[in-house]
Length: 487
Image (tube, rainbow, N blue to C red; front, top):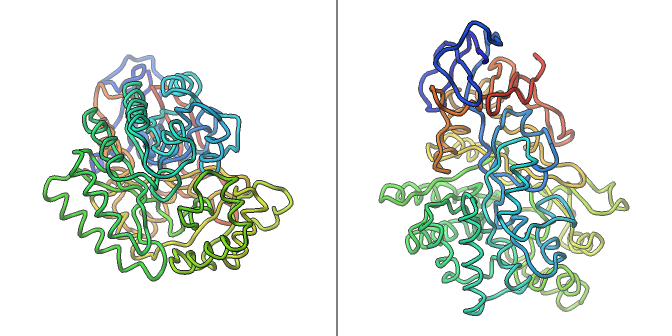
C-alpha cells in the first residue's frame, strides 16, 4: 500500500481544497492501511485526480512510450479528434496516410482495420489511459476514399455500420472535422444519420466545426441543428474566434451556447490555454481544391488557371493574416531552415505545398488574450492540449499545457482558482465521457501530485520541447509511473 501523507486534497469537484492523507490499496483509493506501507510525504504538495486530456492527437504516439503527457500529470488522453483516427481502414492505406499523416504525426506505415484491433494495441502497449473517438474523415476514406460529395445509399449504410462497430468495440464517441476534406463535404443528412447512432449508444459527439473565423456563428448554429435532429451530446472542439477581425464574434457564439444549454441541449466546449493554434497548411485552401487527395491537389496548384482560382478564393475568405502564420513542420530536409519563419503570402504557401507534397504544419496566432480568458474561465469549458507531433517544432502545448494552466494562468495571473482549474482537467472532462474522477474510497488510484508553488511550463514557441516543473508524482492504477524532481 501507499500512504500519501500531509497533502492538500483537491478532489476535482471544484470544491475547496482541504489538508489530509490518502491511502492507495492496489489500483484503488482506500480508507486506511496496515502499518507496513510506502509513505510519500506530500507536505506542501497538492493531491488531485489524474489529469484528463479530452482532446489530443497522440493516436499513434500513445503506442510508443512517449512521456510528454505523463510529465504534465496526464493519466488519460482522448484521441481520434477532428475526424482523424487511425482506424478503420480498407483498401489503399496510402489514402489514409495522405489524409491523416499531417495531424497524426506519421507520413505512413500505420493503420488498423478495426477499432478492436487499435484498442487491443492500446491496451497492450500504452503507458497512459486512452479513450478513442472514431473519426468521420477516416470513415469516409474507408468507404469512398478521398472523394468528396454525397455518398451512395450503399456507402452510407456501410459508413453507419463501421461507426456502430467502432462504438460497440469501446470507442468513447465520434468526431468530425468539417474544415478538412473529405469530411467537410458531407451533407447534413449523412451527419444526422451518424449522430443518431452516437446518441443511441450514449456516446459523445465532438466536432471541429466548419469555421472558427468569419463563419463561426453559422458553424455553431449548424451544430445545434445537428444535435437537435439527432439527440446527440455535443462537444464543440477548441472553440474560439480565430483572426483579429473575427474576435467580436466569440460573444455571439457563447450567447448561443448558453441559450441552447438552458433549453436542455447537452453542449459543452473545450480550448487550450494558448492564443496560438496549430494545424496543417491545407486548411487554408478551399474545400474543392482538396477533392481526390494529395496528388489531385498538387495537380490543381500546378495548373495556372486553377491556381489563380485558388488564390482568388483564399483572398476572398481570409482566416488569418499571413504574418500571423509560422511554419512549424515540414517533410523535407531541404526546406528545414524555413521552420520557425512566417509565411510571406498565399503564393509562397502554395509553392511550399508543392515542394513538401502538401505536408506542411503551421502555428497560427488566432485569438486575443481577453477572449482566451473568457473561454478558459467559462463554466462549460474543459481545458485540453490539442497537441500533436510534427517534424520540426511542435506547438508548446504538446509539452506544457497543464503546467501552463496551473502555473502561469492560475498561480501567477490568477485567472481562476486552483480548484476550478483542477475541476476543468479532471471531473469535468471525465463527466463528458460518462466517467468519474474523484478522491474517495473505491475510486481508481489515478492521481497527480504537484507543487502549486512551483508547477510551470518551460515549453516556449522557440523551444517547445522543454519538460515542465512541479509535477512531483503521477500514479496510475496504484503505481507510480512518473516521478519528477523538485523545482
